[in-house]
Amino acid sequence: MFRDFSIQEGHIPSGRNLEDAPDGMRQELIDLFFGLAEDNPGAVSDGRIHRVIGQSLGVGAAGQPYGGYRYAAGRDIGRVEWPRVYDLISRLWPIYEHAQLAEQYRQGVNRILAAHGVAWDLGEDGKLHRVLPASAQAQIDAAFVELNEPQFRAALQLFIAARDAYDDRPRRERDSCSNIFDAMESVAKEKYQRPRDTFGQVVAHIRQTQGLNEQIVSVLEAINTLRNRNFGHGGVVAFNLRPAEVDFTYLSCIGAILMFTRI
Image 1 (tube, rainbow, N blue to C red):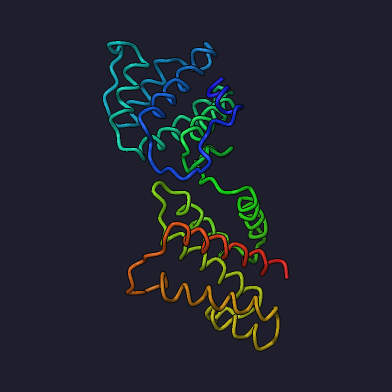
Image 2 (image 1 turned 90 degrees about the vertical axis):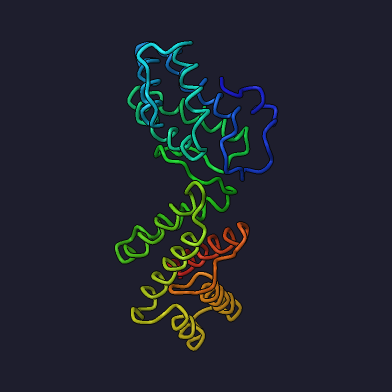
């Protein structure tokens, strides 16, 4: 029911890159939180939703607030910094999941986020993930599957750290680039059985043995140079990649991970 007409008619922003929580969006979320409770009596109470919102946001929750639960919760959510709104979305997930309303909650949240051009969606795991084009998201999902092999355990932990930094609010851009590069390096070292080498040394070995197409090797060398000059360990240069350049770095390393695991 939430945003039903506007979603069907295509009245949503073409881009999903907003890192904020506009006032209108906050009030729509309150309507969702309490609407699900009101439409499913006995599953979850208005009073409980109000208490969780207040305590999660660090404000006192009156037993019988003036103006009712919706008004009080709307006032509280309107006063907090924008990242706390997204914390609240994740905090309420287990309540609706326990009430068997998880999918209705997730769909409602995502319709509201999409309508405001927000950079995240609520996943089936109850966590907020940055919205990417379908083809890019498919690559991330495929890499996660590939890295679940036992020999890539170390790379998987770095991959998860990179994804968490990339999905964070606001995005931790240097950590996203650094961790995804390290995950790629770990996969390459495992694949070519060169655990003591740097990524640059692994790539030099690949070039020497003609293990990959020459142009692909050149791309890998360029990614290594990008890392060394912009976000390498112990680097003294301030991180200054633009958001679109972070996207490029992140997705390029994921593409390389898939290539290494499949050759």
